[in-house]
Figure 1 (cartoon, rainbow, N blue to C red):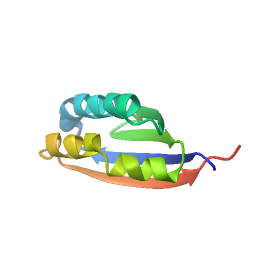
Figure 2: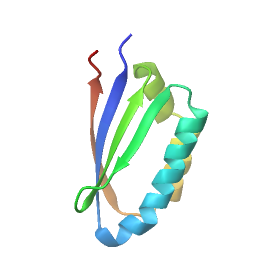
Figure 3: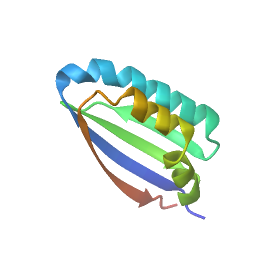
Figure 4: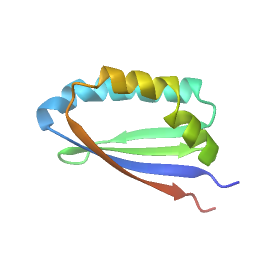
Length: 94
């Protein structure tokens, strides 16, 4: 089975980034600790945006992440932060 990756971009107001990043980092840490299929979760900050690069053991691990407790908690905690998320899923080529 091929590894599965996600490249995501958050469009977020600059004044919200300082509030949002600590919540996002806590989510990342929980995912890496508690989700065995989550292999990598990088947070990148190009000018005026936030990006994520996530790698999962396979698509099933990604679906487990999407339905997991950490994402539910993160979405609840970040509910007041106005943002737009776009993402693309990819198969990693060996």
